Length: 415
Ligand SMILES: *Cc1c(COP(=O)(O)O)cnc(C)c1O
Image (cartoon, rainbow, N blue to C red; front, top):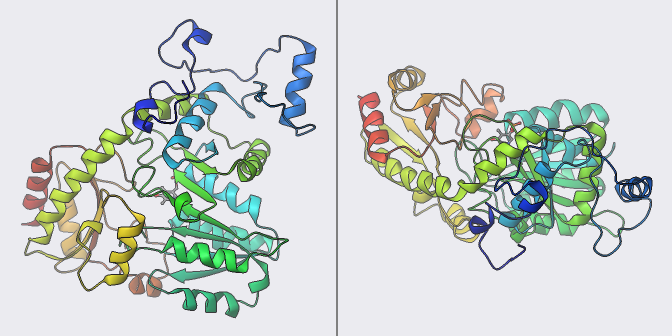
């Protein structure tokens, strides 16, 4: 059934899967196999011609199954289903979010190129950009949330490599303060610096708000990347990643994935398909719970400030305007400044009973952590201060539990 008029949530149980090819099994089995049998030598030859780009695909020809590093039914069906949420032409799934992100950066950047990225980005991404890409002669410059188009362009000019700008990689909302980045501004910059020879690509890490509440492709992004470990997986039991974009760009991403060999395995693919069936109900419940938790924290005398997209201060017109344009929901991630410092934050974290003290996010269970000493411990202290990641900041990922239970846990831990 290929009915694009149906909503993604209606298609997550069936899309792209034909039971008659699998003994009538209602669910897609786990194709735990390394290789696939060709019917004839001619068929094998035809599959390889397409896989290696030796000829163009015929009109309705699909890439035949060859070997699980190239393709596997669990991955292909999962990729087709992920495309529905972001309305992307194609998708590639990976064994982690980091392998998705690093593969994109490696495929589209060459020695001498300039990468512009937003601060703060995920710690692993930050390390890959600063420590690994630079080893291969890629120039990198960062900008901060809150900077406008003129200031960002000044950073590009000051780098001395403006003529080699090849890619912009951003993460919005910024973790853990929920500061927003204007994707339309990033897209305008990418277009302005594109030439006939080189298109500047805009890649957006949509882990925090996707695939439900932010659709970067609609705002001019060329590529969307995910840690599928978070909302897409949603149960804290699998590490995975995904990249989505146009067929042309994804052909290159999949090409490098084949040769790096960092595709997801069939078992991971199967787990993610199972997760996708409940993605929308999970995320909506998480967001509804987060709204109640935020209201409780905003009112609490031990809480100094709440960083939540549903309560951006009236005077913060920049973030408000971006929020209205780019998001359809305030999400389920929030942070707050506790009165005091590390001592008070730790006392609170150690007292939690229902919330688990752990990093990661987007899962069915609620999590709490201390960014300054945990997820962001590797960030330069001066930059950390500038970004508002102080010792009194606590980050919460809200799960699907009963909101009243979550609030009573927070209440007892705050006393
Ligand atoms: C977790 C995360 C990653 C890394 O993903 P892994 O699946 O852990 O490799 C990248 N970006 C963001 C925003 C994340 O939260």
